[in-house]
Length: 311
Image (cartoon, rainbow, N blue to C red; front, top):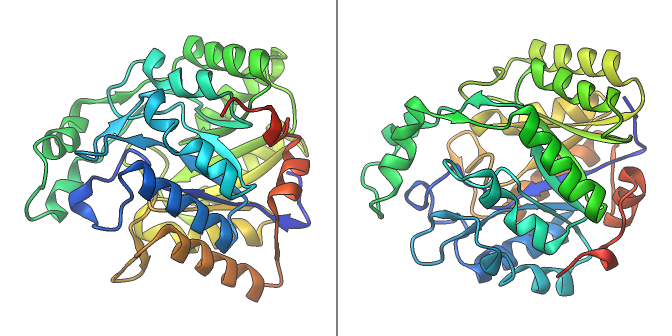
């Protein structure tokens, strides 16, 4: 693993897991997503991981036109790295999931490194009454749902975004096998270092949120990639802060945001993405760890630059 002098904070602003009824603070409209992203950057996030939502219902959307209602404004207001999802929302086709990234040609795009059972159906038990008709079935249908990213899908994304537009990737690894999938593409020469490996803990269907699992994922990545990769970690739900802090202590990077957790701490709902970013930044600084600026993160990840995007 490359141990950076400074920690990259990624903020995942809205995502496609949580629904509007779970938190009144979840950004839905383009204006809300824009404002939340900029505030997160001002709080210390060097990279912004972005999804879009239908502004009327809050349902996840792959419509490039919706992305274009907030991406140019974010670029005007901050120099933070913009990272566009290719995971999209549950049930979207691959064409839908990559449509926005193909149009806007970002510096970074997320890339799930395999197919997994993706269970968020238990979340219905935390909501007394849903605001919108789509929310309950969206969650409950994940009892019989596979988040699909086959070898064919991964190669297509790498070629269409990486080779054509110079986009680099946040490689999202939900289990140990996903690291080996990444190693396969590295061996084939389709992916060049440095790799930004985002290890994800706590999603039902993926690897569990146990500290031993983080150590195992890191050890496996070290064996497969040596010093060709940067480790980053996100912990879903209540596991967020302790897991990302552990990543930083190991020399890795961190991801927070309302996509990953709606909480600020035990029993405390986060009122904004910036609150979570500010908290993890305080933790980093108390541990005598420096936080990377967007320019420093670009240099670490060897990105093409914000002047070469299409928004």
